Length: 303
Image (cartoon, rainbow, N blue to C red; front, top):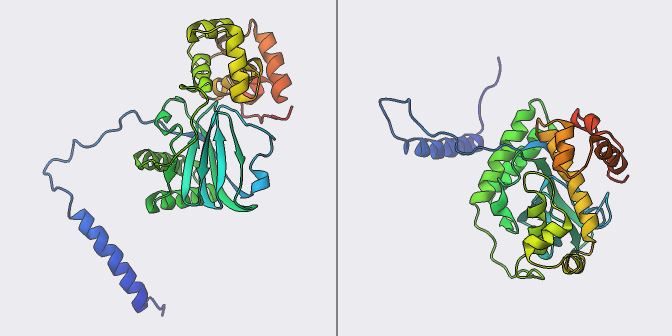
């Protein structure tokens, strides 16, 4: 005979949980017709989700030493040890129990760790519309109990990938909760210019159609080309030309994976004169052809 008895403490916990759920259920209406309800509004799902942990401060800026920049979103959640996150031309000090979302094409690196040992969760992903999470730009948030439970559920789904959709849907719910969270109000370093020059350049570079030239960008920003180049280097610690070349290639990565455009169309949108020059530049940068990457190949960013 199987013993199906439940201990008194377990029964008490279960009873409390059921009571709480029952109380919530009783708050629901009791309609006679159940045909009209809540509908999805502008629902955007993340894709190509990667979860990983960093447990030492030394590893934060690896595998690429220096400022990272790519076409993916980076969700950061700090559980142990404070570190300063440099995003574009701002700095955000993340303490344990806090998080931050780095958007595509934002420079980011890490400095001033409180200690070498840390526990930070990173979730990188892609969105068909990079503007979907724009409200979270430069907006650190508190890891509330609800957000922490969803993060734990996301990690559980990721570690046991019987159904990849569970990770996608759990991350979507986590991001929705983060959007609803109250931003942390704390003094932050201000940009070097009234409006972030990096943000302005990136917005111009990501417009639909061909990427504008430096001369065209300068005209749209109301300054000379030489002034734009000098201000950008002083603010971002990298030349504008190198930054735009990286943006072109990262924009191509996103379009190859998330759009149905032909490779020739992507080459044109990213400012290349021909598919041959685009393919050559892509292979030189990433060690793989555009078509191979579109079909699931892995980039080699140290190329």
